[in-house]
Length: 516
Image 1 (cartoon, one colour):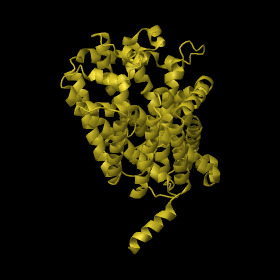
Image 2 (cartoon, rainbow, N blue to C red):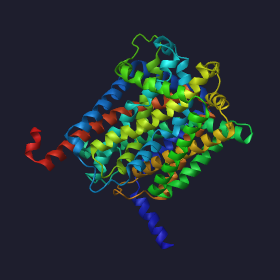
Image 3 (tube, rainbow, N blue to C red):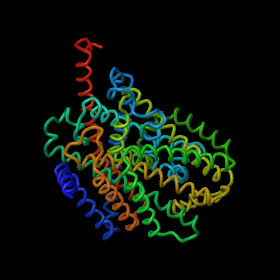
Image 4 (cartoon, one colour):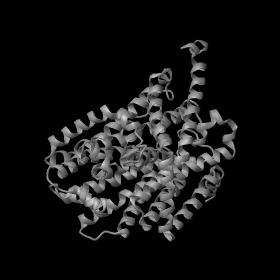
């Protein structure tokens, strides 16, 4: 008994209570507002998003392109040779790659892979550029491609250097800014940065859950033959929360095993569509063409801002996605950095891009192009169904109806998505729990009670958003708003990394290194 009391008291002394209490109160207040005043809160979100998208869109666009170029420079510069910690890599290349993929975009990639092409199909800009065959298959690869991954990889290298080279015991967003801000990090500035990071992460997770879980609910209901609704969606959310809460008790070993299982389920789902759907040739040819189209036009679409607002396509889509990746890059880069011990900076950057892009491109090419085939070849008007107000989850179910063994396929989708969600939020709870400590040595995992608290926190806000019946536009707005201050912090972290690694390089290589 006394031992348990001592452990509890020790944990209380270790916890940074501000990073727990303030987000708890903030999330509780936001949940109350969204549930009590759904209409008014939606209007406010629309106004703020309209301002940020129209007036500050260039900010998000320049950040995206700039950070991509920055990672390429780091990889092939002298700093690319720096090893993130001593010894051999902690994990094999396959295990490392699957953990990167399943801890970042895999949670909602299945939802978007199946339906995103149809969302673009209704955009006038797509028709103006050449039609859905060429561009509805290209833009998903752009929005989930190199720029998206650059946000994760740039910070992953910075955090990996901080953890494994500098052996920092404060695993916080603010600590990565110390090379520039110095002792200010120990005061108000540090608290502000960490609170911004935590709130942004909560916003990102809420967006993800609120968009994709209705599909899980609908698919599950169809498999079991019962009616779906908000209640079913909330039950699914609680089930996911239970699974990933249970998994965090097993720590990093549990996450690595679940990541491997997720990957195998993912491959089975891809083969189900690629071979079982009867559109193998079309899927592969359209995907190959989309990759070529993206390479040819990458610079143009990366920098196009539609200054005359003839379509507002970049404001509605590209800006949203760059903001979405920014709020997600609060946690997952810490996780990627922690599992990259023993790898060089160059290997971490190029390997991260390789595994990440390979996974996302494969998903969109196979799952997305199958649905596109039903639209352009067989007259299944999925895009028209959505344009008429049809739910995205119902549109995906319509696509599944064209597949053999539909219910088995839906069951496979449900299991894979739940596993992906669990893996993603396992890694997130592991990282954000580290934020809750005043100090936490590298290699030491946060207390299970702290991880359980955050596991519960991440599920509360999505439930509130579902009750408020927020549209996709309003859910996207949450991420865009939260990403604005995060972008400034990301720039500060990257600048701090350059300052610190230059100092390390000169110290390790002597005076002659200055002239290299």
